[in-house]
Length: 575
Picture 1: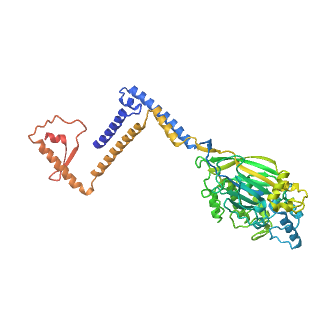
Picture 2 (picture 1 turned 90 degrees about the vertical axis):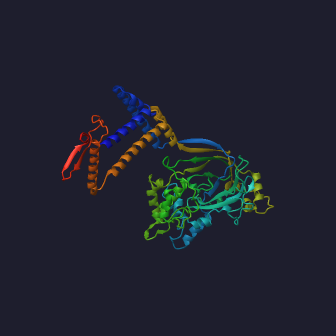
């Protein structure tokens, strides 16, 4: 009991010393005030301040845990900029000559649904359309990858001329033997059952240089030929090309954007760059790369390698890939060719193992079940990109070309003479076919509007350092607590813990095995004998001066005859 009392007393002393010396406001008043009413009053004040501190701090912590964000806009001036990639698609997917040949073959041969184009006439083809405006007619055509490669509009068919900052892109005439990768330019083909054979143009900025100056006199200029005579009017109600401007590394999702240009015009497209930086979890819900996105796990489960050459993440491309993967699971075919070995969804083919169920029927069921579902799986698998680059464009057009320029074009491009002149003789003076260029050609000039670009950046509305700063302000406002006060409190806790650890160590050291009971009894007996001898000694000893404190302990001793004598230390002093 004496040991416990000592620990309790020492702990109280530590706490009292802390309160009397602490820099925390109010504790010193509580400790030093001797008046009971004053002590209670200061205790009430301190507890009230502590309650206010707790409420205010909990509010600040909840504010931080909401992970709110704000969007800032900044205009940045750049010394040089990357020129974006450009994807061009002819609005006519397949050439008219191919479709006419296929219709004639199907009329003269046994009907075979295994072919890619399985209609006998335009009438049977039209019967497959359920839309009054025939907007779904291309979905019933059954275009395959081989069809697009063979009968789509090639690069040398579509692009007649290309210059960048008045420098020729190819350093040679554009012919069938034109390589798709030269010193100045790289062209990549992207087949699409919805948009045909598209071509992406990327300039080699090592040789041609990056954008360091802006204006209409600089930039990329293309002269395009839509080959109007190859349009199948039933399927191509409009003439022109679709152009999309996008980052160099991004996959061109032309069906989700782009600009449509028509022949007989010259279009000026000015570009202004816009960068978007979003915050990931927990502040936002964005994806950094395809590897980190949930769509990557879906592709691995289906043994697909869609992303082999397209690691640059965009929300639009993720949506396209997600839809194709689900279509593959449902109908064992895909509509787009994105580094996949799977077949196109051909409406003439049956599903494997299901002889009365055709792919077009499967696609219709898939479309109604997937596209019309607002909460489909792609909304979960695809999130906006954390780093995104957009190009805001301004379009202006003019009528192009005039008659004198047509004569200039004829001299520069003699391969157009058979279509351009009524008589192919170079010395012929017959009038020009003035409508030929207006109906087939268009020119587009793309340039960067200014060297400044906009950056939209998400930042934390309430960051962790701000929360700590506000918490420190609250501690100082309510209790006057500083960093030194916190260190003092931790020192108090350390001393209290050390004191109790010392008590536990002493209690363990005083414990002994049961087998040592006799030796302990003998030890107590010897101690009692020593005390009695001391009482008969001649040393002066005042028996009336007894120490204050608890009652002296009682000792017992075993006698010579096995008896037991019990006495107090005070009794031994009187012996």
